[in-house]
Length: 512
Ligand SMILES: Nc1ncnc2c1ncn2[C@@H]1O[C@H](COP(=O)(O)OP(=O)(O)OP(=O)(O)O)[C@@H](O)[C@H]1O
Ligand SMILES: [Mg+2]
Image 1: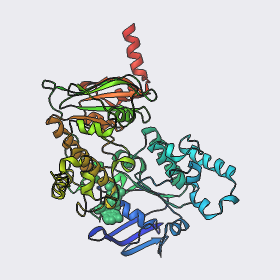
Image 2: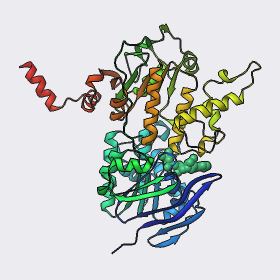
Image 3: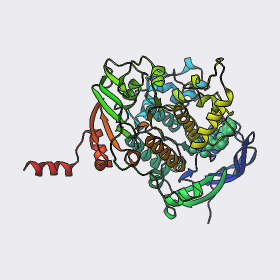
Image 4: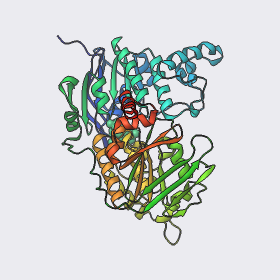
């Protein structure tokens, strides 16, 4: 007996000019299931979601809801059909409050003066509290990326939908926030709502989802029950080959390289205090800690993006006088922002111009003219090394998939041959295969003597990639773990300040 799927896709194709984003794909969503959609960066996942949500129109093929072919000409039409999408990129109105964003559609539909704003705030707060205690009168611009992501999700929860599509909802969330979201998603499923779940994180897919569909290069590959699949199997289907080694070999601890970056007593008088940090040439230093612990603020202050109230930053033995970010770049110190959209890439500019945007001086000839050929060569070389999937280097960044935009942001950091690179969540939204490539590239750069700092909320990445990990808690360095001490539990304990019971027992034994 086969039940009619709540949502079915048949023979769907979509091209953007010469780029075939989807070719003749199928997909079928059952009532009350959580269905994972997987595929490499650029495989076509978001494109499919956007067509089901009425944002894009298919070139060919059918979308069936409850067995009936429908056309979905607009997002409003999708909403009427009971379809809600949480977009991969945060698309909130930054100047409006949380409550206004959550009920944006309702506010637009009715005339604002007729609305009961007290009730609106109370309702919005109720939904918001399901996810996190964010006051709904706060302006969205004042929220962290992770909280903005939670607002996006709350917004979708208020729509009375039967199909909920989540496009990488946990990319910017902490472990705790993600767990809370999973609880809610399971609750929705138990109430009969069908969920499409896009993620690059295998562990969460395997704990949350019932079935999984894999796309590769715009083509449908397979759909399997989770119980009959495995992460290795999924990766093989996604990438089309086996990935045997997830993290590059760490270099044997030969003699330590020369001291490259030395930060002493750095404070910003607000979010963090008395930070000391040393980085040697050839080293990959990890920075762990909870989101909000002050890791990004420390990195931004080191690089002149935020002011310091005290402390020094020395590069290669010279104390730097950094007044702004371009001073840092000139000295050879670059920062990759965790907020790709806010400060990472220029969406409306071509890929080539994005790659060279950090330092045009290098590409400017004696007449002060930009050497376009050199710019193109550089962009071609770096995008090839990072495996950016694109129509060409002249394409605008806005035409790239989320993960490929992130690779362009990384290419730009590499374009100036920096001495020290500080990367904030560098592999967020990057598929498993590309992640392996990026890690390998970072290791190669380190082997050439570049100093690398990686801020990451992903414990396996800190442990697998880094030589040493510093953990930040509430704006202070809580401790440091050397290569032989690296472990998930050790990092979590330093990050949270909580000792687990077995450790307390050990300590008690030591005291006795
Ligand atoms: N507006 C557009 N113009 C041109 N090409 C586009 C546009 N939107 C998407 N593409 C292309 O379509 C392909 C599929 O992109 P899509 O965003 O669906 O990938 P994805 O599977 O969601 O990847 P990711 O995991 O990186 O988010 C990519 O090659 C992308 O460059
Ligand atoms: Mg996507």
